[in-house]
Image (cartoon, rainbow, N blue to C red; front, side, top):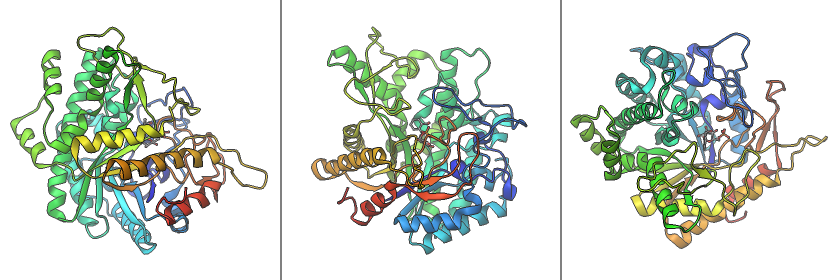
Length: 470
Ligand code: P53
């Protein structure tokens, strides 16, 4: 048991140590219901919350000591691609960036905490967007492989567990700008039609899957003990009712959101997707060599995040039931939601674990789970976040049931944002997930001091008893 974060959401130091700007560095702060804006480069006077984040870059030693006190066995973070290759297309890496992660991993290992590393967590070098158009350009495969080879070689004796692309399937929501940009550095041409957006998304995702497969193969050569996984955002999609058309709509929606996992794990495109590509007459660059690469780079385990479940109704879309994540989802009247509208559904985690395990028979690693909420600081500085404890307890209980009653092979569990950090979706600080409070508000004010919430002692006990005491 451990905890999870991502470099761009906590490190700050966005231009320190030779780091270049990433896609996260050109996104302004949004708020609940207000999307983050993507600016053309870094513009003076805008509020970019990731530039300072919680300043982990300069405070990691004290922070890792706190993580050790919490009792983390493992620490999932990402390596900011732009610390290593500031523009993404250089031949040689930036030594200062490499040294930073050497020091961070040493600090973790010294404290008995094993690093678990995501290679690409919404941190594509911004230069690869402006010069190459992001991952819709085949050249990005080589840039990513070079980055991965560099860090996997450098840290081969410090890091065993890796993941390639964080939540690669978020971009199934191609009608919004956020996921295609953060996943793949995509900016759609002005006035692009729905179909054009979709085709571009599939092309970029294909190149990412090829890049991932190459890195899996290469990683196993660098160190045969490496465990290299994918990372899927799992929000199961339930039929709104038992009406057969609702069931079929849910099935098709699951295909459109989770085919990425099929390719990662099985090494080939599923027939339902080939049939869809044919029907849509997409012109995708998928070569025979790519097909071989995919087959040779199947992942070792399935990393996934779980926060919420979705529901869908058929919307009279028979016979194709084409899915629009932007329009087709409906509220599930049987569950409550967080302040940000994320539906709280612990049993959905057990369902998801069964779905993955039945389908792939590969070990699962829950690499994110958590409850984003507004915390109230009491006059004496304490924070009573019982709602967070309730959410996590219920999910850990579901996880235990999955292992005990359904026979699922679970490798680990790392709750998200166990130290408060910048929200990916909204750029807010006040959407907090942490057991460790960080004094900073949405406007960037605050001392950045760390303190323990009630959930800190609770999670300490959970880790110490391996989930027996909730
Ligand atoms: P925030 C959408 C749906 C599920 C997970 O999210 C998501 C997103 C993107 O917002 O992202 C993951 O911060 C992601 C993390 C992120 C976390 O979930 O929007 O891997 O980077 O911070 C929570 O509340």
